[in-house]
Amino acid sequence: MMNVGLEERNVYEDLDPHDTYFFKIGIHGLVCFHGRNYSIKQRLSAEQTSKLISDSSFYRISTNCYVNLSKVSDIRDNVVLFRDERHGIKTINVPRRNLEQMRRLVPSYRMTAGVN
Image 1 (cartoon, helix red, strand yellow):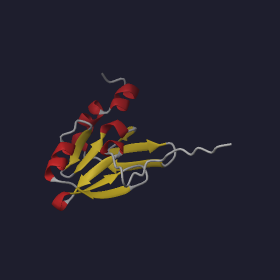
Image 2 (cartoon, helix red, strand yellow):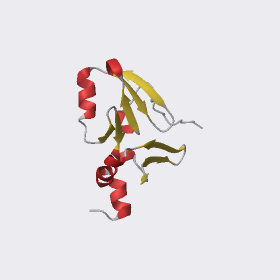
Image 3 (cartoon, one colour):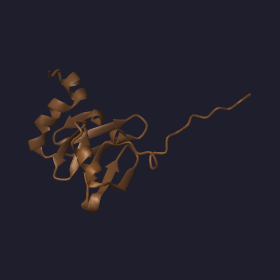
Image 4 (cartoon, one colour):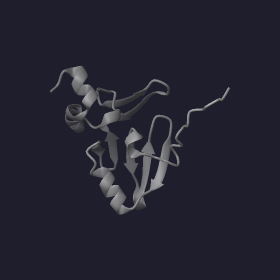
């Protein structure tokens, strides 16, 4: 009998920004990606950072913080929740001025709230 294990992707080596919940841009091209059970800092070129922040999958909630809209599971008061069956809930505060626009952009929120 042969045992075949599932090949797990090493998130630290093969980071895909679209798998992260949100990221924060620091000084000198340092970007910190936050996911379900990790925070990874990577140094990106100015071109890579520019491409990342112009991606429509991410919404800017503050000067240096961008949320992955496809990973948002709920918005309560001024808190965005990212829910994962295995790792629980991760949250981030969002300034009130950004909440309405975010609600319109989040696919899962549109479905549950009945917003078109």
